Length: 205
Image (cartoon, rainbow, N blue to C red; front, side, top):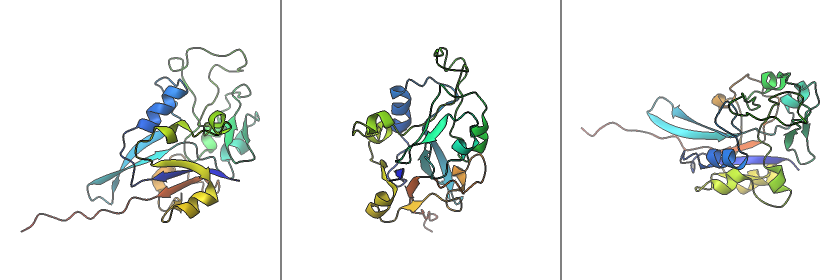
């Protein structure tokens, strides 16, 4: 099994319910760390804008895991990539390696209290696809919070079969997703149903 996120760009309203619910559930204070990110992009210079929501893509070949010299990042048998914050040594090699800028390091304001098991003040953190909920048979917080049902989670192949018109995240179609480097070998587990292009005509003469 390869767990993946599915994002329907045509359904997303840009309301940020998913990002707010995620921060609230995990008690992530305002600051540099964001498990789920929402951004808006202009289409083809036509004056039309659309949303794109993304978190850790739980890649098939995680660059973050390969780069971590502390062994803090692991991949479960279902494909979910997790981080053991007690093992993090603040090497930040995972941040450099991730093509999507998903691993995050908090500051003192965002994370004023540390835990006794941590080796550093602010170990890396990121989306873990709500493993504690999924292991109980429940949906991730972002999926539950989206009023437009624009986000789903499930087996990669099943999501592709169940959503005609959906496609794998690729750098040629979604270059803005690769915010750190152009590494396309990681195999991101994100499937996107793209919003249809909008044609805006001029005023009637």
